[in-house]
Amino acid sequence: MEQNRGSWGSNLGFLLAAIGSAVGLGNIWGFPYKMGKSGGFTFLLIYLLLAVFVGFIIMMGELSLGRKTGKGTVGAYHTMSKKFKWIGWLAVFSPFVIMSFYSVLGGYCIEYMSLNLSNLAFAGAEIKTGSDLFGAMLTNPFGCVMFTLLFLLICYLINRGGVSGGIEKFNKVGMPALFVMLVIIIIRSLTLPGAMEGLKFMFVPGYAVKAGFIAEAPKFATVLATAGGQMFFSLSLAMGAMITYGSYLSKQEDLVKNSAIIVVADTIVATMAGIAVIPAAVANGIQNGIPLNEIALGGPSLLFVTLQDVFQAMGTVGPLFGVIFYLLVLIAAISSAISLIEVVVTYFMDRAAEKGKEGNRPKVVLLVCLAIMVEAALVAVDGLGSNGIWVPGQASFGIQGWNDCWLDFMDMMSEGIAMPLGALLMSLMVGWEIKPKSLLDEIHQGSNARIDGFFSFCMKFIVPLGMLLILVGQIDTFFSLGIF
Ligand code: PFF
Image (tube, rainbow, N blue to C red):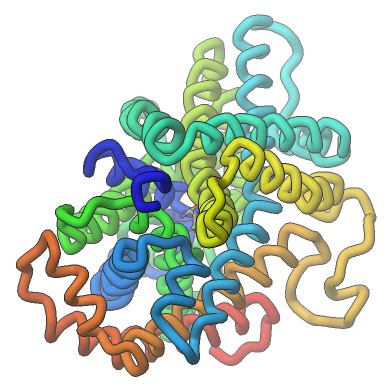
């Protein structure tokens, strides 16, 4: 059965796929802005501490859980635990829900890439501002559904090829390409007049308040919760992705080294993404006399309004940088999306194998993508709340804080609740029920790093505490409860 499941072609292939899963929209529109707003280098330091004591530990835990059981997330939890076996379902639910908006955002990237391509081809034609374009796109539900469909079609074709024949192949080309494009955009961004202000916003502690980007500095507890939430979304943790990818990994590979490389690479790319986008966005804002606190430096508006304006202000070469940039973001989105899809696909493939049948991968991938398309259509038609469709939000239930749009609702359910809850329960299971030693035995196949004491201590105490804090922080943010 082990052989039928397939496996990675090489450790490098696995690493690029895992880094591809980690590097996504979260790195580009979440990390830089949160870092700037929350104290620059101080935030980076807190982020790194959390990444080492919580992220790195869960990463090793998930990879070893997958490799030990040789099963996807539901199978892995069922095999290992009596009390916590249902957590596996949480880790299939979250990726499925995240895909409802991740694929719509991927569709936006394709649309913006094509738009810049046509600007390149028809240079000199009348050009609209970023906010006009974004507004027009959101209020065209049919177009958004079509581009979402196109994004899912690309993912379908990759996942259909299997772990080594599809996912690994894509990332082996996609990740180096992404890196090169990122460097090109960084060079362009840093040579724009006024770019230094953006760099200072990102790195200098307290500069965001001093220069007037934001009114007041967030509290320490808020910074901690923000860094934690960002860290585990960015590392693709608590979503079954790393359990699934680990289940296809050979026993002789070093899980300690691999986990460290994934964490470090993801953080480097997030920082690089910040250096690519923030200075350009700030420089352009300053040149156009926009007050610093009014420049959108995070979320969909950063990508689809602020940066589009940056490219348009660059003259004839602008659309070329636009094409490169949106292609880069698209690759980052695809490489994350295929890992989310694979979590669900592997569950069905394993279930077929348990029944002694050979799962039909193309059919399973097709059905999973179609199911995602149904929920994604809702998010696409909603257009971030632009089209007045019913949303289970503030107006409907009187729940304060989260905007009335389907994307936020889906994000709240997955990133806000299911992910931190899943990670908290996972650490309790490993730390207190099955005991860290059961995973350390697996980790030591392929690695003789002396991490036993550190791993056990973190898994038992630091991770549960950290995850509890993050869970409360996420609920606080999503519902604006004002706890922190
Ligand atoms: N890590 C991705 C990002 O930063 O955008 C998002 C993600 C992908 C989360 C895959 C979880 C996952 F399993």
